Length: 279
Ligand SMILES: [Zn+2]
View 1 (cartoon, protein in one colour):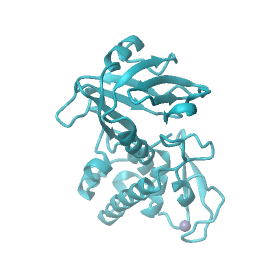
View 2 (spheres, helix red, strand yellow):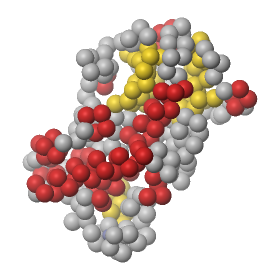
View 3 (cartoon, rainbow, N blue to C red):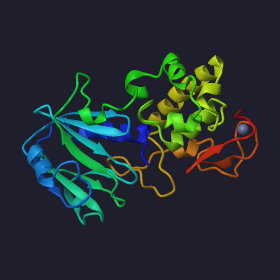
View 4 (cartoon, rainbow, N blue to C red):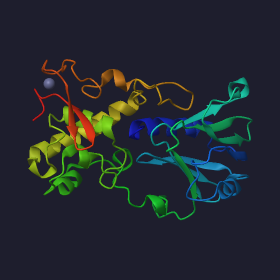
């Protein structure tokens, strides 16, 4: 699933591709993508408007319109946004669920084989520019930073494991399975350590690791896994997967200590870690 670095890469692409462009026509082809409002309502609220800004909060893309409403897009498991022009538009990719024709003749398309992705237009926006529907989201590390004190306050007394806490969108918005594992590795902490068990020094390491991993992953334009499902707006893959220290590397050698990376079951989810250098 695309996480903060992948969604941020798509957002940066949208700034150049759609901001300032008029929405000429919107076609909703799939049944599940638009579900908080009717597809007809979404179309009515988009057609004729202009995209004003391309924002992001956690894993949500926020495309504000010139009437101050916001188009919210979540890629979920397999959603891809593609910006296509001219002959690139045909043939249309299978699983194309939304097509937005722009004033400059290009199209923004939403392709989503697993159909968990979502589009909706919100006009209830708070003072931070965040739609009411996303008010539950915690701090976005890229937009607002991730101070050690914030993390310390939220880990204190918690029995849940670090991976569960880091991926809790109400605490930190944007971190999922890949980056939680990479952050724990960089901080030399096991993903199943309980939040409340960390010393002050370990919390500092975790906050530093989170900032560094996310920054590096954004610079590498995100991670494309084996399914190559994540691509940017131009269809290009990211490269941070080449630098993954533990994620999806079970059985391979840890580059820090030489031990073997393990895949651990934590409840229903898996986590990758190096038992040699994560405590
Ligand atoms: Zn190691």
